Length: 387
Image 1 (cartoon, rainbow, N blue to C red):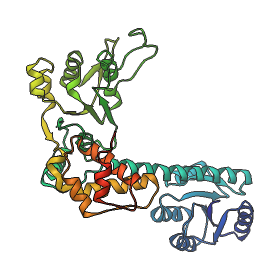
Image 2: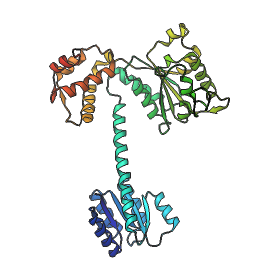
Image 3: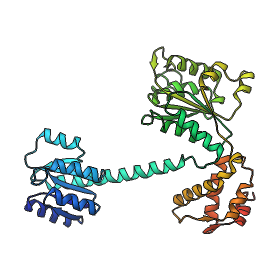
C-alpha cells in the first residue's frame, strides 16, 4: 500500500483517480492546487504524488521543484492533457519520476505506482547499506595517537600524493585508506582495493593490469585489471610487502608513466589513479633482504602514516566499546546493551595482540552472550573463552 497525493484542479480527475487508487487499497489525499498540496506534503509523509502541469495559483513545474526541495525522495508523476516531448523531458530533468498524458490509462497508472514503489524501496535500502558501510569505516577515539592520524588525513587527503600506511595487523589501516579517499577530490570515483597477500604471485599481474583473451591457458576472455577499474579514483594496495618482484617492476612503470599494459598485449593504456598502500612489514628490512624494490618504496612513500596499535591508545577503549556494542546490537536487531565501568577497566588491562579487529570480535561476543548489562565478570568469562 502506498501513500499517494493527487494534485489537480479538475475535480473529476481528482475524484476518479482517488476512487480507483483507494479501491486498490492505497491511502489517498487530494489537493486542488499547488499551494494546498505543498502544505499537505510538509505536514504528512507521502510515497508519491500525481501532479497536473496546467493549474491555477501555481504551475505544476513549480510545484515539482518545491516538492523536491521539501522531500527529494518523493516520486512525482506529472499529468498533462497537452503533453509534448519537450514538456516531458523538462519534467524529467527537474526530477519527475514519470510523465503521463490525460486522460490517464488505469493500467499505466498501476505500473507506474509499482515502479515508483520499487524505486523508493531501492533508495531506502541503498541508504541503509551506505549507513552500515559508513559505520564500518568510522575512526573512533580521541587519543593523542589517533588524533595525530586524523590530522594527517585532513592534510593529505585533498592532494594526490601517494600514501603508505604502516601499522600492525588489525589496527585499522583500511579505515585510514577509506578516509583518505572519502576526503579527497576523487571521492565520487571508484575506490578499488587489492589484497596483495591473498593473490598468488603468478596471478597478481593479471589482477592489477588485466589480460587479453588467450594470454594464457585459462584466459578465456578479456579481463579489465584493477588499475583500469580505479581510473579517476583510488587504488588501495593492501599488504604491498607481499607483492612479487616482477609485479613490483610493473607497478613502478605504471607509477612512472601513468600507463599499464594488459598481460598478452603490447598496447599501452593510460590510467589516472591515486595509489595508497598499506603494510604491516618493515619494508626497510625487506629491501635489505632483496624482497622489495627500494625505488618502488620511495615512489610509494611520499607520505607515511603510522597507525597506532590498540595497546598504545587504551584511552580510546570506552568509545570503541560503545561504538562496537551499538553496531553489534543493530546487526542482531536487539536493544543496545550497557557496559559497566569495571568492565571497561578490565578491557583496558588486556594485551590486544589482534588490535581493533580482535577488540571488535570480542565486543560482538559479549553482546551475544551477555545480559542487558556487560559486567567485569562477563569480560573475565568471555574475552578468552576456553577452547
